Image (cartoon, rainbow, N blue to C red; front, side, top):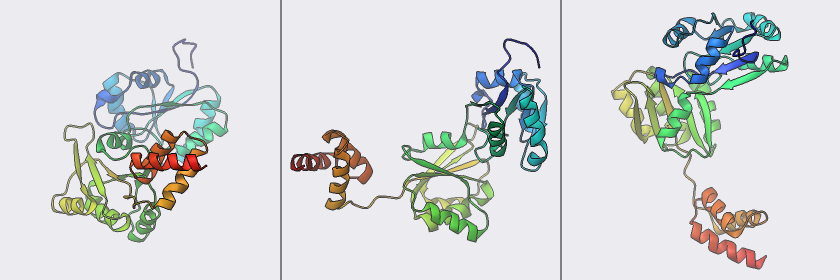
Length: 282
């Protein structure tokens, strides 16, 4: 602990790191890691490579699923004494399919400040380039490996009216795509591989088509699967009228029509014409 005016404010810094390309490290993340008292790593060997690339000499210690319960009290004690501690994962944003949630919760409960240091995230990077609707999305992480548990997991997601994002390993990719097609329907999807790396690739098609493709030609690398939302059925007149009547209570005609078009998949012009009629009748 020093009186250095450039020292970060005491607290826990949840710090994103690159998912592949080292140049995706942010200036702020480097400054925080250099100014910290301790960097908590999912794998100290992996983080050592990142630190070497940016001249970070801060002490590192492991924090992962296997030791978290044992070392967490000591970390909280250091935070209470005014330490600056970084939490990083092997790649990307901590807590997104990585350990760390319980530490953040415990730190906040203990009154310690928690700061997000944003940066790379494979899920968001894949969504941005996949061409799937991004106004609503659900991050599902890794589906369970056992068929029964996976079936229950996917059945719950089958009615979610949003783009779905999954992480997957290369050996399980074809099997996972088959399961997604079976339980979600044969939706359009994108398989993103090795994002930001030399062999980055985005494969697009139906879930069943890509299951067959990757069964015949297995791949390597880190994988994100982006699944389009379920296609909406054609809304009937009563459903459109009910939506517009509710919307017109708080919106102008044009805005209510736009909302109906987005929510129900109907023509904006048709929704506008119907909204005018309902507004006049009301």
